Length: 44
Image (cartoon, rainbow, N blue to C red; front, top):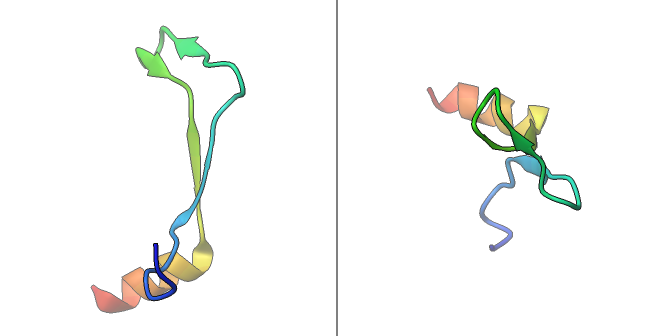
């Protein structure tokens, strides 16, 4: 990834994979940067 490519945010996963029967997938979460969202909104 280069400095020209903005980073969206962070992906957070548990150290040990945790499977959720509710979503039928392994758990993970993405925290998206407000700065990234603001720049994206201006483009649209």
